[in-house]
Amino acid sequence: MSGVSKTVSVEVVGGPHLSVEWTEGMNAQQALEIARNTIQAPAKLDFALQYYGRDLGYLVVMINGTFESFQAAADPNFYWDFLLNHQPAKKGLTEWK
Image (cartoon, rainbow, N blue to C red; front, side, top):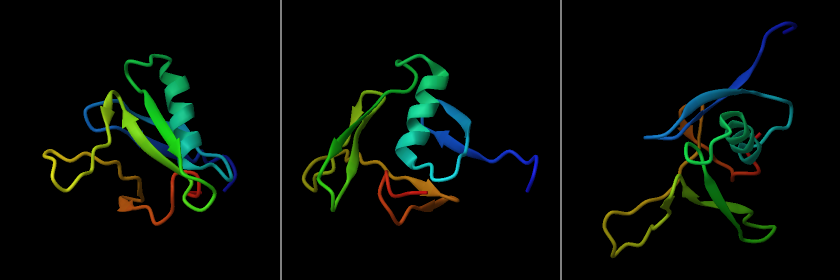
């Protein structure tokens, strides 16, 4: 598809929503990094990752100051979900391509 621009939508509920140019082999972490660098304001899009080894990869633990807190006994519970074509991604942050 010559001349057609492909984009990835990065949307944070209660935060920014923008599109970044998709490149071959891009993963979700790279899309987040490009979005953050495009915005150039950490207060509008900030995130933290934790690495769990080669088998599990990276987990998003914080977006815009809200930390993941999935615990069955705690309320409210917060966690992150990456959607691919409006469906939960079947692979991790760095495996999504």
